[in-house]
Length: 491
Image (tube, rainbow, N blue to C red; front, side):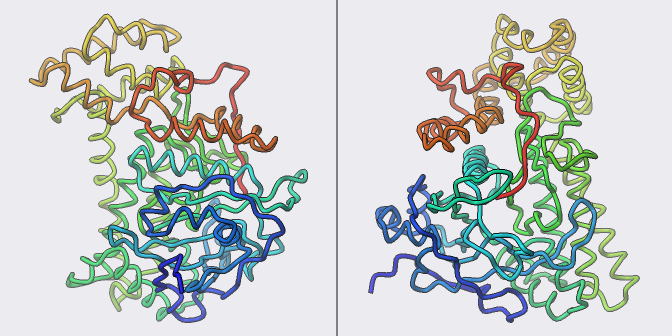
C-alpha cells in the first residue's frame, strides 16, 4: 500500500476533551487552483500525486487519506478583549501531522472543509477570496523570512457559499508547526482543568521547546520561551509594515509563528495608527499597538500557567510578572536591531533609536511609503545622487534632507564600505510586499476564474529582496483611486 501522507500523529493521542473527532464534509467537484510543490516535497509528500484527481480530493476534504485522524481542536479566546470560553475550529479540520525533511513536525490542516461541533451555526466553509489572501500573504511572509504558517494548496470545491452574496467555495491546506494557541490553554484554564493545562504544557514543551524540559522549572522555562518568540515575531512584523488585524488570543500561536491571516495587510504610507480590519473600529490592533497587544495576550497565557508555576498563588504571580517584565526589553532589542539594519548600521550607538524615530516621524508627517523609503535608502547609502528617489516619496522632500544629514554623519562613524552596506540593506529591506490593492485585484480576477494574476503575484513575492526590474510595477504603492483601506475577516 502506498502511503501518500507520512502521518505521525501526536495531538490526536491527547485526551478526548482536547478536540472533537470529525471528518471533512465531501464536496461535489474539487478543482486544484494552486499547489505549493516545493513545500509538498519538503513535507515528504509526492507533489505529482497531490495534483492528481485523488490528491485533489484529499485537499478538498472529499477523501480522507490513509493514516489521517481528522479532528477539530478545542480552544477558547479573548476576542477584542472579551472572553469566549469555547471557540474551537469551526471551519478547520486537522488531518494529522507529518515529519518534514528537516525532522520538524508539521500539522496538515484543511480550512473551509465543513462544519464541526465548534461551528456555532456557521457553515464551516470558506469563500475563495480569503483563501487566496491567506495563500498569498502566508507565502509572502515565508519568503520574507518571518515565522509563519504555510499554504500547501488551494482548491475550489465546486460549490457556492453564502456570505453577503453567493461566492465560490474553496479550501486552503494550511501547514503549521502546530495550531496550538494561547486560547487552547485558556480553554482548559477556564474550566479549572489543571490536569488539562498540564498535559497541554507537556505536549508543547516536547513539541516546540524541548530545552525547557531540561530546566529546573520546565513550565517557567516554557513561559519564558513563548514570551521571547512572540516578542521577536512582532518586532519582525513591524520591520516589514505588517498588520495582523485580529490579534485575539485564539489567533496567537504558542509556537511563535504568524497564524490566522484574516483582515491582515501591509502598510503603504507609514502611519503607526494604521488599521485595515473592518471590524477593528477602535484601533485595538493598529500597527503600533501590536507589541502592547502581544504582551496582553502573553499575560493571559501566563495566567493559565499559574497553578503549574508554583503551588502558592502569590509566588506564582510574582514569577509570572517577572517573566512578562522581560517582554519589553526583548522586543525593544529585536526591534531596534532590525531598525539599525534597515538603516544600514552595523553597530549600536546610543543615538540610533532617536535617529530611526526621527525618520519614522518624518515619514508619518509626509505620507512616505514605508517599504519604498527603506528600500531606496540602500542606494542612497552608496551615493547621495540617489537621494532623489527617496525625497520624492515625501510630501515635503526637505524633511528627508534634514534627516539625511544626521544619517550620513552616523554612517560615517562606521568602517564598512558602501557596497557591503548596500548589500546588507537589500537583505532586510524588501522591494516587494503583498500590497493590498494587488491582493484585491488578484482576488477579483480569481472570482472571474482567471488565476494568471495570482500566479504572477506569487512569483514576484517569492523573491522579495531581489529588484526584478521587469516587475517594477509590483513594487509601487497604489494610486489614490487604487487604495484598499478595509480588509475583512472570514475564510
